[in-house]
Length: 62
Image (cartoon, rainbow, N blue to C red; front, side, top):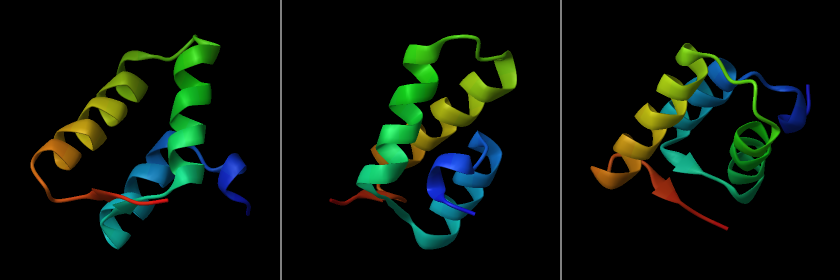
């Protein structure tokens, strides 16, 4: 399964396991936000990812 086919829940699990957000992860999040139609749970997943980055538990890499 390619990164573009991951659901936001799967992406969250992958990011929390690896402790990094890659460029591809950021692109998928960006596409989801710009595409609209996110439900409340999907918004919460993105907010949790951002919180974990702010706390230093997850790093952003290229």
